[in-house]
Length: 186
Image 1 (cartoon, rainbow, N blue to C red):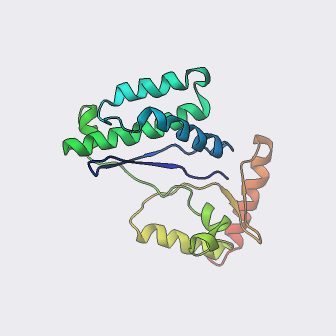
Image 2 (image 1 turned 90 degrees about the horizontal axis):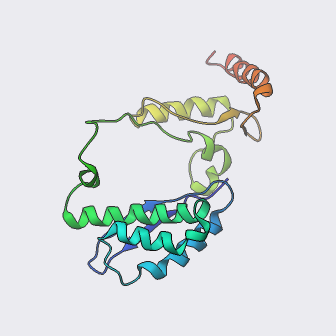
Image 3 (image 1 turned 135 degrees about the vertical axis):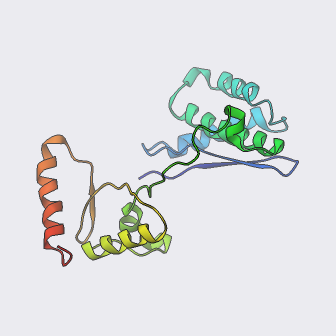
């Protein structure tokens, strides 16, 4: 599992912008190294001409466009847009033509994944049993979410998450159905 990478850029005016450029394919250190390489283009510069700074970063990374270089640039670019909107005292969406929707439904992403894999490190309740899954579902609802997304989870000790091949799907679904049928909740 990769590491979440968040960019934090602070200006000398006291404005902080945030961006995200995580890489879960195993290139975490490559993205972080690329961010360090791009600092030279940004340090001491006015953060408001975002498109110019994007072009400057892109020119520096033009021999390796895509992959980690573009992920690093995207995270920095997002943080610069955040700074610009804050400096203007407007929501970021105003810089892109205004709001598109009045509301958007949110879901709890990766529900259960981190509780099964690293609950102790995050100091959150673990998910090991079907009862833990039900309790997590109650927590999701109590926090106001009406939907969740998770990986295929096979309870047990340890819990297993699977990204199954098509040929394995039927067997995995049978195991999941058996787990829920065998639970006290029926």
